[in-house]
Amino acid sequence: MFNLYIASFLWYEAARDSNDRLRGTISCARMSKTIEDRKKALRDEDYEIILSCRRGDDEAFGVLVERHQKKMLNMALRMTGDYDEACEIVQEAFLAAYRAIRKFRGEAKFSTWLYGIVVNVSKTRMKQTAQRRQKTVSIDNPADGPGECLAGRESSALEALEKKEIQAKVQDCINTLDEEHREVLVLRDIQGFSYDEIADILNVPEGTIKSRLFRARDAMKNCLKKNLWEL
Image (cartoon, rainbow, N blue to C red):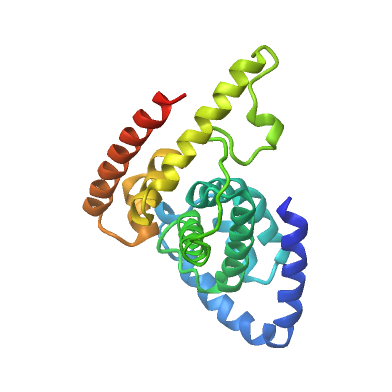
């Protein structure tokens, strides 16, 4: 879904940067050497691909898009509750990452750095569209098509409807959380990041994360208790 859209922007960026590519090659070589000297413990599955990106291989960045786009979409979708908004956030985040790939120093995993961009873009867009009506989406598989949000073939129409209503109620409760509580809940309980990873993404102490998560879970529990009782 995103590859065609992203590819057109990558072509534009490559054309715009063609005049200073020669100067960038020297800088890229130095930064590549810096990353290659880092301990293997800091390396991840994106390591070699990032080096290719630094050497000017735009197709390599497409591999990163393919690898991370679904999780990024799910994260943005949970943050905003709006599918169309989430798609735009992911596109903007990938473009920001592409433009800044030479600045990535490898001090944290690439995915941590990338998802941090998603969180920041989501927060900015949420502030810009605070009054916009938000859509409700599936809690289990938000990035799939609408038909896949329904129950399987064996499920009855009533069961499918009940499941959809519950999923909508859960997203409604997520939407009631304030920004700092919503982001930790999404990162920890939905995306499954460790506390260390969340600390790197949000740039806040682990103790603060745990405190916010406790309050977010408590608010979710109270909200769901109230809303699911009404079904």
